Length: 216
Image 1 (cartoon, rainbow, N blue to C red):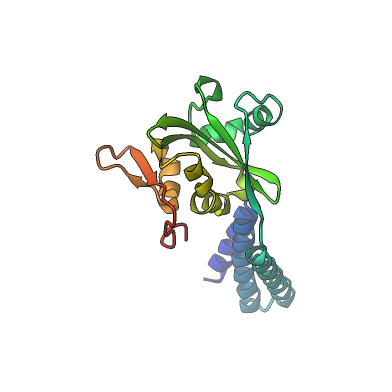
Image 2 (image 1 turned 135 degrees about the horizontal axis):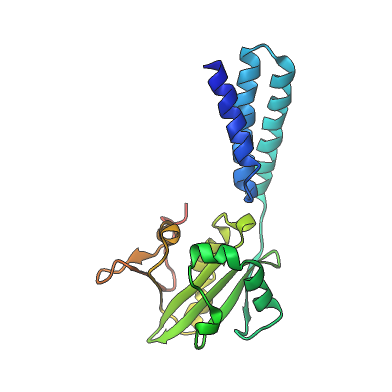
């Protein structure tokens, strides 16, 4: 059992160091350090226990700081033919985008609307959709860079920023044939499979929506 605790702690810490998401990194590192603290106490290896207990408190502090931090979110529309900012973003994150949106190509879209999600004025996400008419917007891309993939950007977009879409005449978002990696995320954001076609996810937009049951 003692060896198991030691191995478990080592695995957790190793995995945490591979996390690009700071929130997950801190949580896994905290759990690994806590396990190593127990490991050190059981073996009476007091230096090991003391150092890792210190790490537990450090991780706990930074998790509290991350939780308490107030981020400022905003949206920035950019032209679809922007060759400087938009094209560079798609080039840099193209490989990661392909994992979640296989076959995505901005050039193949006729008249897309491209919106950057800004977090403290840093572009952390890109949202692209087509206006299909009758108040329906088809989502083509809903991407967040790995370091900011904590759902905060999406909650802002769908739970607060959606009012900007309503003002532009959009009444519902649809997403057709999402990848398996994306389905769980969409459900958390408030999308539901269409009754007529389970491969289509729909989210109506309406002023005063109650999102308290989503995104937790």
